[in-house]
Length: 381
Ligand SMILES: C[S@@+](CC[C@H](N)C(=O)[O-])C[C@H]1O[C@@H](n2cnc3c(N)ncnc32)[C@H](O)[C@@H]1O
Image 1 (cartoon, rainbow, N blue to C red):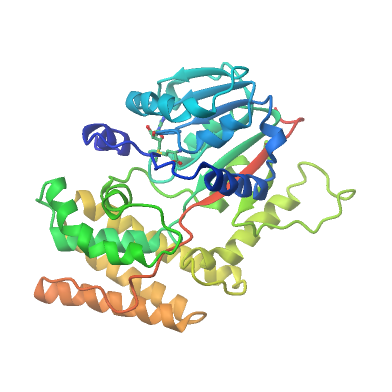
Image 2 (image 1 turned 180 degrees about the vertical axis):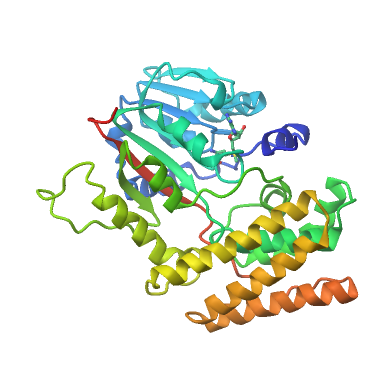
């Protein structure tokens, strides 16, 4: 099967490889992220850490610089592990016991547990069954330990999916990967250049965001929270919008109150994952659940079209985009209008065979990936 891992291996691409020009600013970004997640630097010192799917190791640098006691790297891509060894060499401390395991997480026995388990950019659209995979990841967290994951839902990833659809319409299904990359790089470079803080080269971004095959489906924050509800309590999120107003003396661990509250807050705010430029007041939960369902509808058909070139999928995606446009227009008329125009661009393609992005589409990017942290309850089974 064409999976992200086989795709990366076949084309000699290493995910999680970035240029490390300025270690200090990289570390301050990571420290800020971890702080939002409730993981201050001293918590990493002397900790036992499992890093699942670190790729080339760019993000492992910060963790290792904090001098954990034990650091286990688990990735099923052997080349990624070799690259990681070089990446991390400058920050390694002799006190840290490093272990490398080249294996598929799903085939590993849970023979050890850790103070911190990190699993970034490994689950959504990369695993056949994201929830089962998440359960497996969580089994490696020791009682009282922390789990750090990333989520992506079909709203936060919608504009990338619309770009993937447009890319398919522009290149067709028959071209080889290199030819598709050559055609798409100049189309999408202006989109990427609208992102001020972007540190990715257009060709690399087109490969890893638009051309890498998708497997399974999204992992929304709501699904992650529900999947872990029995054994974990939420710790933090980035973006940091989950809040808990309950008084600690009334908060009984396992009561499920904060879980329900955290899911509700996600549901009421998920429209803010759609467009990273904007921050709107919370929406009614039902309206946002409809929005998420319409985004799921669009993403499902775009994903299906990538392996099954049946135009019925494009028609379904087009209907879903019209529905999304109606729902978005209520709180953001400008973005609603661009989505409407994207629908018309799909109609024009169906009639004339050419696809042109509408005005205003280039700077539309979601808050693609959300980080979430959880603590395993000490009284959990
Ligand atoms: C997109 S990369 C993410 C790299 C890094 N964590 C980051 O955030 O940049 C996904 C990594 O997870 C690894 N991976 C995916 N599925 C896996 C599995 N089932 N078991 C072990 N590693 C896996 C891949 O080999 C790849 O190195």
